[in-house]
Image 1 (spheres, rainbow, N blue to C red):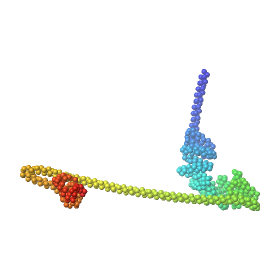
Image 2: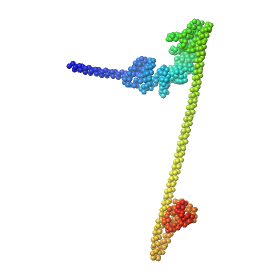
Image 3: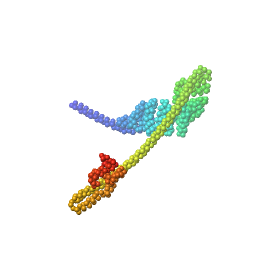
Length: 615
């Protein structure tokens, strides 16, 4: 009893567990389906959060949508989520994760919109650029550049050319950096992209300054100033005046430098560091012009600005204070600020700043007749001055080298263009020559075809003529044969009739004999009918042209009867056949041919028929 009860309880429990599992599975499936349908509209939310800079919330939504898309095998949506996660990680400055997500996006290119795909590649190029990975950065930049050329996306091309210019600038590849940045400058002007124009302007002027190209920097600043004044762009206007001030300050033209620095100060923007740099440069210009009170006013402004945000950098302006206190004969304060400038930030300043410092210390020691310190400061000052001069010479040399390389590059381009033009002319000449050959060949072919056609027609006409002649000859031979046959039959008939008459004459009847004699004479006359022989000669002459003329010219002694015998021999008539035609005895034919051989002067062994056929 207890065993069966336990089994029943187990079965009931098992059934309940199975039902519970099925119910939970259905609930989870419905929840997942509902969640997935909800996440389908979350891409727009992710986009809004990313564009508004709420990267933490955007990350939460993007990961949720990514997991849902993967569970439903929606590869297109998963690729889009990875793209947004790459952008989110870039905004959160988590570069490793950003690169991982964007590389996955790059690999899932078939599932992603082309615009988002190449935006991801552009971001990869920028991330690798921050990591100083020139090879990978340039690889992705050039992929995006090719796509922008195909699609004509000028804004995307502008972003790529700026990135490549900065990349090559960081890696000291001057020529390529200038090429890309100058293209970016022209594109940003054409597209009215003023933010990009400012970036390119500063990058280009830095490059020009590093290589001593002051004329190029000035022209660039003037062009930029013209645009910024028309568009009322304070940041760009300030940047242009600031660069013009640096150009004149670097050329020791402090009045003009002060003028342009004040213009920049008048158009100062919300950029803190640009405002500080401009104010500091105004103070430096006043000190170089020995207007120390005016310089002190701007130095105090710089110190106030820096003290509020970066108090640890105030020693950067102590040399200006030292110059001011020296002008007021407050030597202790001057020494204090000069040594503070030297001790706190000596290594961080340029050779020019150190040169100015030791020049100032040398002048103060010299005024106090402190020969040892004056000598020591002068040696350091001279060393720093030589370094500055060396750097200036190096810059001039670099500038000359750049100009030479530019000239060589231009010469190479001109040579390639000339060679290309020559190749183009050669190609045109080859094409024209080929066309002439083709035309001449066509004309020759047509001429030969026409000639062959004429020959074919002539041959056809000659064959027709030959065929007509042969037909005519056959007809004439038939007429000759018919005439000969008629003559043979007639003579055969006459011979038979003559035989009958001869038998009748032998009968004993006197009056009948006389009658038969007269009839026999009439038969003899009919055998020698000249009209028939005339017809025979006519038909024979048509078939064997000029045969009789040749015989008469060769053998004038031949009689008309001899000519008839020759004609019958030429027709391959035997003695008997000739005798029937001529109406004579065959022996008479033999005798006549024998006499003919003598007239022709032939030997007895010579064949008369062969000789006559040869004529």
